[in-house]
Length: 97
Image (cartoon, rainbow, N blue to C red; front, side, top):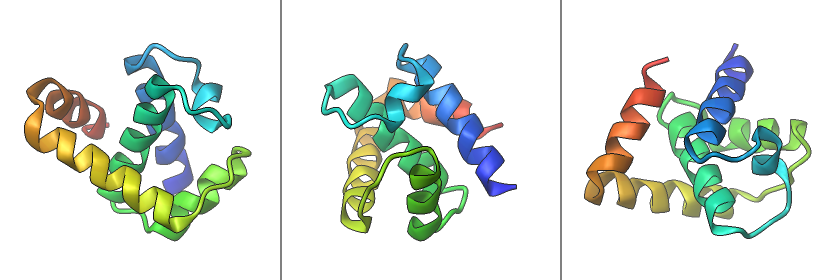
């Protein structure tokens, strides 16, 4: 069930960032894709999903990532949630699935 939620989050985040859903799971450092990934980690973590689950779901979609990168992404998104109203609203809207 959590994997379904993760997949829905990935789709919603990709739409919000106007990128292809598959781009989130590709090795790229394009700012827009990285920020989308961070939001996906943040939403998933606060669902709550463990970092291990997030890592496993990312791997299921072909993207290998370490725990420290997931933690960093969650922290970056958390910072934006606290300081950017638009980002906060977007996170809130997506999380209400």
